[in-house]
Amino acid sequence: MASSPLRTLASGVVERTAAMLVLLLIIRVVVAPAPAVAVDGDCNLTAGFVQVDLPEGNFVVQSPYDVPENQRYSYDVATGVRTFWVYADDKPFNTVTSTNPRTEVRLAGHDYSSGVWQFEGYGYVPSGTSGTSVMQIHNEDAGTHATTLMLHVYNGTLRYYSGAAVEDGIYDRWFRLNVVHDVGASTVAVFVDGAPRLAVNVTPSASHYFKFGVYVQHHDVSPRVESRWRNVTVYTKPY
Image (cartoon, one colour):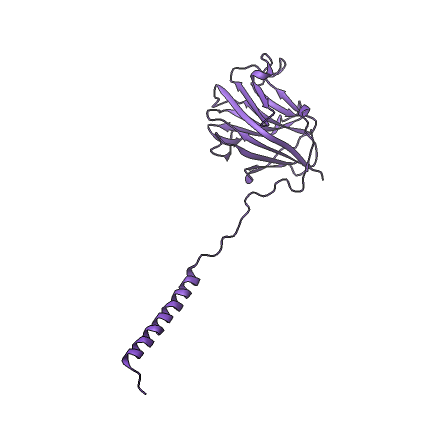
């Protein structure tokens, strides 16, 4: 029996509709975005290290000798925030040295001369602070070189001494700082918020220790400098 025109038309519509659906399905499969792949950009920098004990007595404050410590340093036990400030015309931290003004913590009890050591802390530098060191790896007293590393702030940029930029836009935000010193390899690596920012070869010295706070430098110095720190921790990885 011959097909009616109506049945033929209906059959054609069904075939064309089915074909379009298949085509749309193919297009959807081809152009659909691939599933996002999770990337962990905040690697565990302390994996393999051992945390050292840091009682409060290890946080030795150095501040201008002629004013009470609490006029240049505060420690909020409730929040764990240590605030350091000093003025460009302040006195040194003792009457013997002629070094620039500072309010810093010298981490005592953990001077080191071998192994791999790591400083970790959360820092904050308020806008307007310039011309100051905020963290150091200091060498032994009377050493040939006073420091292995200094991180300075100039006009909102964290720098390796007064040179290479380590991190821009440092003002008015908390940042996590990790500094890894491999004594045997004579290298230092700096990480900000988990990202590598600096890797340098350094000159060996007999021993080292960590410092943080504010220490006035020699150019682009603001009248008052300040930094805040919390959750400061030290780790080591002996050879």
